[in-house]
Image (cartoon, rainbow, N blue to C red; front, side):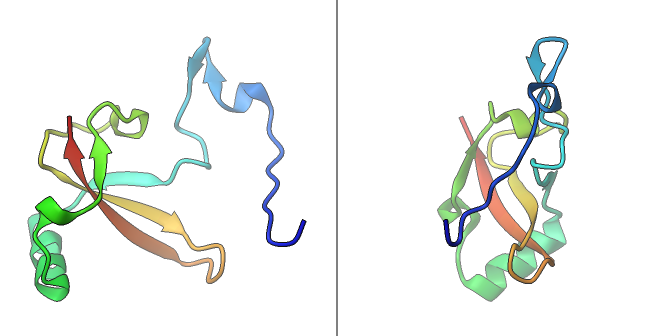
Length: 94
């Protein structure tokens, strides 16, 4: 298939002691955006954080960081095209 990505993996790549393990290389890094980063981002985009796409506080990728509703999460994903890390932002909701 043209444009398809096939990833070969084993069940053990995702499960540890019978639980889903999100600390694998398929889950991009999630962190809380800093105040200065958020200020620069909102000024550049002209959009308030409340208008950002959302991420649930129950999202498994957030379980290892202390987040609260209203925090803005930075997700660092590697671009398939440029192979450079690109940041994406989400606001934490219930």
